[in-house]
Image 1 (cartoon, rainbow, N blue to C red):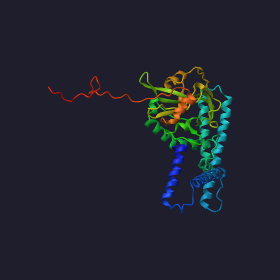
Image 2: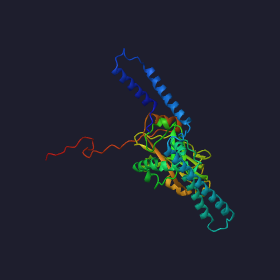
Image 3: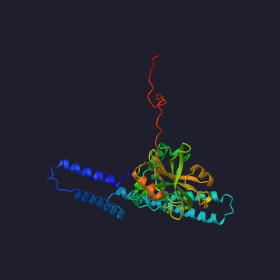
Image 4: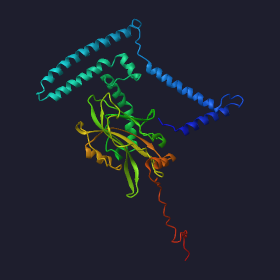
Length: 373
């Protein structure tokens, strides 16, 4: 969703009020601009109250004995669930026996197969339960429960992932930043309250403070990751090309199914807000989550600069790309304030070189098209 600045919001409200004045005569229009804003505030509060009521809702099963078909279906679902949990109990016994005999050469393979089979049975046992379906539809999701992880990942791969890959390819984030992308983590981020869709335009005023990053992952074990935010569209005037500027770098972030934030990580490069220079086209501010090798911590030099190729960085530390997203920005007046007040450096300005007119002579006068002999 494209976010609007306060200035744009005021323009929309003003235009709406002007429309009302054109429709009604002044004496018929019993509403002032202030009252109009109050109405919009009241509506917003009602929407918030409505969403709060939705979050307080609890599942209420339909009464039994009303619909015989529903009663029979529910009976079948719970009989099937009991059968699946009996199979799970037997698998737990097999896992316990296998753990006592670790000398088996195929221990890891057999253990992984049993865990995978157990996970699938846990999903199948609960996936048709009406309460589970209602909870997922209403956002009451517990990622520690296999069936909710399965439904969350299925939803992500069906819709949001398709949109992400479409935009990240159309905007050439692949291959300009990364050679390929096969996401395994749903990387979401928001400035204030709204989740940002991949590739949308934001205003520099919206991104002065670091975003809240949500890393929806689907593995139970805790793994370590590195988060980066880069701008691959920063001009390199000396070499007449582009360079990648780093805006944020956090290493050694522990993640699992129940922990999807960036707490616990080590900040190597503190966040600096996007600042697309004047005279340049839109910039693609790219966030990515990288898996660290062998679940080991990595050590980054404290003097690491903010200009570095992403491919080179990933190769140096053997990192694997697991998820990404991006947004775009262009220059406006707010960028000048960022350069002056936050970065404390002179604001660069770029523009196209003037075209050389081959018909001008040494004095700058236009040459005649034909010469009389």
